[in-house]
Image 1 (cartoon, rainbow, N blue to C red):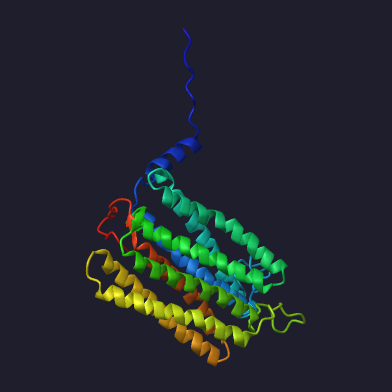
Image 2 (image 1 turned 30 degrees about the horizontal axis):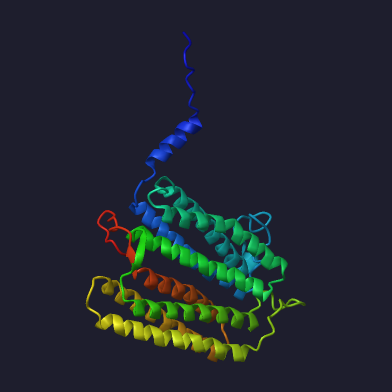
Length: 334
């Protein structure tokens, strides 16, 4: 009589088995925390990346992974450029860790919550893609169109992170919308003008004075050659159209009382309007003051916050596939 051989379990397999069994099968508070961190860090990375470019700090840390040959952190000799570049590097590393963790934590629920799994997978794949695109940006001599595409990829990642946070709280999207079709159409139209505003903003920045290189260098980074003053005026047109449409969306949401969904629509539409007001004020002041670096960077960060708010307003009008799960004592909606 032959005996069936018993497979030996390696320490690595036992460790992975324990880790796998500890992964959640439903959305838990750690999932929500990591989802929020991925969104906040994506926005923060836009801010620090913008600061690197606007202050010409791309070589603030001349080596990698250390900041200098002998130091991991920036030395006083590197000045503020070293601090800015090092900060951007650290946020990139932290974001990469968070994106990997949020992917792992939803791995076990990939069947029940395929939406979360796909969103986190795309974010994970974006890490090497952004790294390659960043390298192309440097090799292109900071070509404004390549730099702009780098920013637009970040915008898309902010959208994905916003969807991740929303879906983690509210569950999978169902079929159809909770609000009337004409209101959904108005929201989509507003989103289209937000997109046009962002695209024209990228072109306007590419024609402006902040090339991203050292202004004392012999060869400055190229500009796109477009008329900056004209682009600023053109850029403001869809921005004001967006503002007008948002005011209309807010007014309709405030007078609409039927249905619980209108409460969330009011909150998100008012939030969107607040971001737009801040963006318009900063944009106007920066143009009048000759594009100071601090205001330009604030304008840049507000642009991705605007996109996130617009995304949330669209999401809150979709029907849910099922009743959202409550996490601890948290509410169903963020």
